Amino acid sequence: MEKTMMKGNEAIGEAALRAGCRYYFGYPITPQNELLEHMANNLPKHDGVFLQSESELAGASMLYGVAATGKRVMTSSSSPGISLMQETISYLASAELPALIVNITRGGPGLGRITPAQSDYFQAVKGGGHGDYNLIVFAPASVQEMMDLTMLAFELGDKYRTPTMILGDGIIGQMMESVTLAEPVEIKQKKPWTVGRRKDRDYRNLVISAPFTNEEMVELNVRLQEKYREIEANEQRVECYRMDDAEFAIVAFGIVSRLSLAAVDSMRNKGYRVGLIRPITLWPFPEKAFASYPQVKGYLTVEMNEGQMVEDVRLAVNGAVPVHFYGRGGGFTPAPKQIEEKVAGIMEGGDLA
Amino acid sequence: MKQVFGKPKSLTENPFTYCPGCSHGIGHRLVAETLDELGIVENCVAVSTIGCSVRCWRNFDVDVVQGAHGRGMAVATGLKRALPDEVIFTYQGDGDLAAIGMAETMHAAARGEAITVVFINNSLFGATGGQLAPTTLAGQWTSTYPNGRDVDWTGEPIRMAEILASLPSTSYIAREALTSPKRILQAKKAVRKAFDVQINHNGFGLVELLAACPINLKLKPVDAVKWVEDKMIPYYPLGEIKNTKGVG
Image (tube, rainbow over the protein chains, first blue to last red):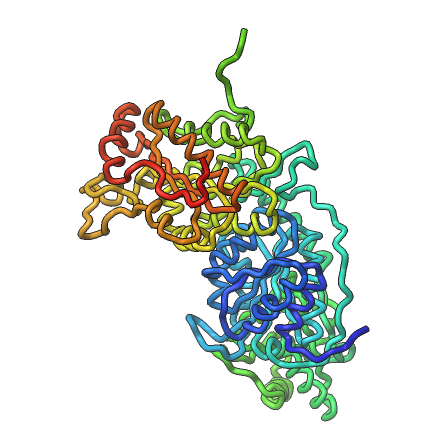
């Protein structure tokens, strides 16, 4: 297995090529330009198509066009650009088209700043655009996961005919780490629903998000929800660290989980029985994991936002134990020592019902 | 008995859902006749977007992708880049193409995408009930400007065909009107050329078709057609505006 050093953003691009993605549409925005440029430099070498779009609105619709042909396709952006893409993401969900959207989140709201943030959690996991739908959302915590989860995102997108998202941040996107390169995959899946090459079949295909009758629109919603329940049952992914005997646990995703892991190790050395639950899929949220640790007396959710995932943790725990929050939006990155102090304060303060 | 006239093969059995006197039926027919002549019904993907014609997928007997309002040419760009051997066309109205989709329209044309655009200009937003479009004529009644379009307030209407013809990478641009048998035959030739330029020259072809919307103009069908003749054509001159590849 070949190993190399690369940036997180480049790892996503390299994984996409290895997953057989030959179409990329994007528009410049920091902090994800390395990915745009990686695709610009490498897709032509693979007889692929790179096109810089006039906007994220247009880029997302170009992606929609390719997705309708069943070919693997992706785009990437950062928060304000992802907001523009929500229009088409809703259409992708409705038309049941697989495509990968990467959000290397920056601090908001508004134009915000290019500092790392996790403030787009709600937008990513609650649909994001109009209508009832969900994306499968992955939260890589390392450059290796940027690669591995990108491969998985393409696979699951095709399997469920649904758009997928990588939700990263400027730290993981831009830091360099050692990566074991994923093995290139050969796409064997048949896609009888795609447009083009109609002469190969005796029916025509329609990729639409506007059924003709109200009854068909309701049927579409029923079908989508059945698919989402299947994804929730089968695709929850989570890492549980030092949880077996934990009496208190931190919940964190992405780069914050790395910082929290350091806090857990440090506190374990001091005798605190602390563990870490790290959601790898943000949607479906890995709620089953929480039921596995009934001995935990309280949770602290740490996020680089004003408290978003904490709502899903509270739903998963369903009032059984207190769920605390520590975080800040706009570009705040918590230090392990700060997390440790927060956990120690709760555990020693007797705030564990 | 010899059949001399019938439904084009490229139209499905689904009835049109358009209002009496609407020009979409003629527009659909001209496109379908062209698909028949070119024999491309199995080698063609259409893009529909928004408004009354969003459900043209029920009528054109080809693979269809329905994209978001205004993004038709961006969707067509993705399709053509992924399926370079297929014929790709969009069927779009003026609110779609010239208002919400102006950026996608301009940039697809600027890139010279090898696609065909059938642009139905009826001077208003039809499906939503007759609101102002960028193409609404000065003084024309709309539901959002019931005293008529005041060009000091909203600007003068946009002539899309001329603007797109000014872009160096477009190959074929024409404007015709669906108002009389003679003009419809002329329009048919322009539709054919807008497809030919894509198929034979990998070029961007657009045909703008002036169309009547009696229900929103609040005119009888015959009067709506006369309105297009008397009011629209003087502001939107007919004919071939650009034909750099010499399709004919």
